[in-house]
Image (cartoon, rainbow over all chains, first blue to last red; front, top):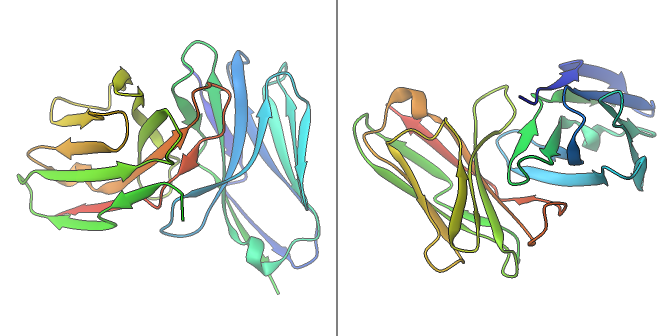
Length: 113
Length: 114
């Protein structure tokens, strides 16, 4: 059974700092890994999707990397802004069951002005 | 706006009542997913459809839960005889007909069972 863990559960940083969010998973037989952002009481917004054959993806100030063999992904946020404050979730989709994504419980990020 | 929409956004009901939620996916998306999320947790998979076929149901989906996607477009999720433990955010997502595709989520329906 796939398990996804995100550490830390919460993170507070001053504006402008670069930061890294971590995601680990127990079963490396994945199709892809997706990072989402969730604002309080809202749905999920897709940030980046990395296919199992890829090592990283970039979008603006965000860079996500994937090390499938070690079961890890990181989301790097450059020059953080107060508007980045949200919960960040990672989700993996298995090769053995491509309809289902397994989510971590997220890291809640607060960027202080 | 052509994103995923869900209705209603909020539902308050009494224990024992039945509720039904609706999800309208992005128009060209063949796959549709239902998840449930409780406070402080990540979403948990409930079920997914490819077109009108329901291809998998989680063990979380007890006999009181049923989902349909009759014409391969919108989907409904019904909960019968609601219990307080059913209180959660119910999220719908859709994707194109590929396992590798990005999932796009709707805003969710927040259910409160009194």
